[in-house]
Image 1 (cartoon, rainbow, N blue to C red):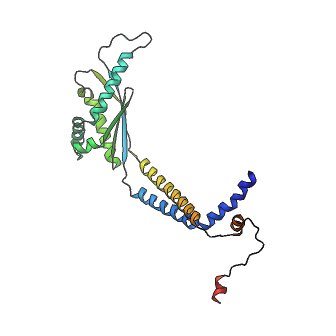
Image 2 (tube, rainbow, N blue to C red):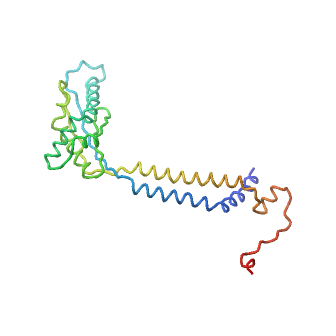
Image 3 (cartoon, rainbow, N blue to C red):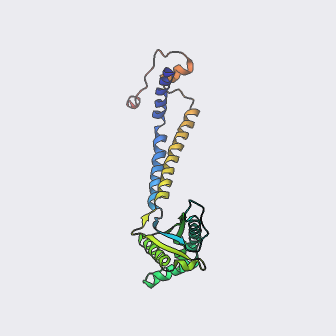
Length: 235
């Protein structure tokens, strides 16, 4: 088995030598295209902050050994409601007005489009994504200020306590999507080059070297006539 594998290795490198233009050109073009797409792709920046929610409404007695069981469940439900509050037009309008009061021109639609929210247990994560770091940071800080000042008023009839625990100090670039696209383009180029080289090799019926002749005929090659170089042909 080892001898058979070693005998195929020279054939493999012979194919690589014959088809190197395809194996080099296509991945190189894919690499250039990936670099162009990555550099020309629209950049986005994300700022994020966190707040915790605690439901203050009266709760039934918890099961034995599970202190604050019902309060924690109610707090998680409140956090769920706030993920929808943050995405709403009323909250976006309040954030836009805070920004406008500072002399910054942001529309309600722009703020609403940039806001997103998730929660883990009773921790609310608020994120803002825009095309510039300064705008993302300004919107995020205004959104957290609005939550800290008026958060409970967005859930009327439900007493909750909302505390902002993490204010952002900078907005970070989101380049993961562009990086994945660039890597995918390069991999696609490598795959396409390998497939094309394989197809060309399969449909090529010529015999290229001594080893191929011996493999096809089952007979040893006892001699070969060397080819003439180009300068001798010209003479």
